[in-house]
Length: 135
Image (cartoon, rainbow, N blue to C red):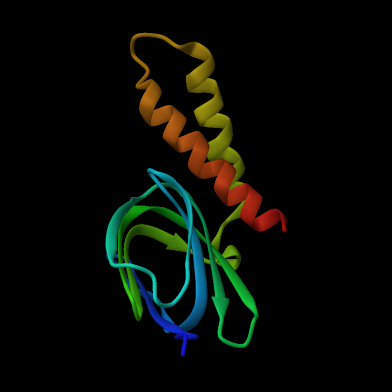
């Protein structure tokens, strides 16, 4: 008989962001997008900035912004240690807009005083947050 649910815990330095039984979780890793079902083979991965989609046991879905961290997958559990995790309602739309503008301005300058990798990451984070709150 197949396992139909697994335990998901998402922990940030500030709080326990999510804990509960789920039927699936989807997220972005440094290796690409991954969907994890109960019974998955054990592994660890590095999380890349992206959207975490949680399919709860009743079939409803929750989405959150997830910004880098580590993922541990076990057959009956999935543990995420994240730098940042935010629900859409926690995201300040004006702040995201300002962050996006700052990052785009830095990337346009391309001067020696600009850390391009940091500006690209800031832009990516802002775009993820924008995409999440627009839905």
